[in-house]
Length: 255
Image 1 (tube, rainbow, N blue to C red):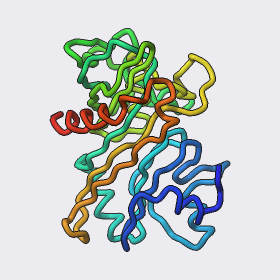
Image 2 (tube, helix red, strand yellow):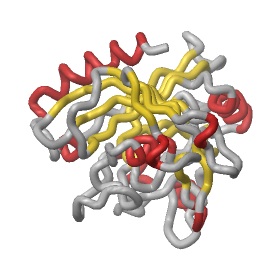
Image 3 (cartoon, rainbow, N blue to C red):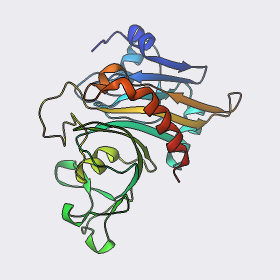
C-alpha cells in the first residue's frame, strides 16, 4: 500500500473543492481510527492536511470516501447521514446465485460475542418471502437491537457469483456484510464471513453518493467511483458497463 499521501491523493482523487475532498479508497487501508495501522486521516495529517471524515467505509472495502476540509461543511454533510437522507450505493460480488432482480434485507442488527455484529435473531429464524428477508419480533434475541434496512438490485449474474448494487437505507456498522452473510450470500473475500478460500481482496465497493451541499451551484454533491477491473475478476466483466447503467436506473426507482 502506497503510504505517500501526495501520490495516493493524486491517484485516488475523484472531486475536490474548498470544502470537501472525495477519494477512491483502495481496499486494505482504513479511513481513520486504526490502532495498529496507518489510516488516511493520519497520512493526511502527517503531510499537513486536516481532513474530517463525513462517513466511514471498512478497511477491506474499496471505493468512494468523502472528507470535509472545514467543520461547517462537515456538520452539514454528516447530518444527512444521521437523518438517513444521504443517497448511498455499493457494489458487492457475492458467492451465490438465484437472487431476485430486486430485494430487501429488513433485518435488525445486534452486537454479539467479541464485539461482532450479527443479526439480532437466530439464523434459522430468518424468513424469505417475495424478495424480502426478515424476522418476526417474537424471534428477536433478548439483547438491544438496531433496525437495519438494505435494498438491492441484481447487476450481473455468473455461474457461481452475482454482482449486486445495494442501497443501505440505515448505516449500521458492517450492515451490508452481515445482511448478505447471514442470508447465505457472503461477499467474496470477506475476512469475517467468506469461508470459500483465500481471495486477493474483499469484493465490496463504495460506488455512489448523493448529498445536498449548500455552498455549491447547484447545491448538491453527486459522486461516483467506478470499480477498477480487478473488482470484476470473479465474473466476465464485458457486460459490466451496461449492467451498471441499468442498476443505477433501477436503484433510483426503489422506495
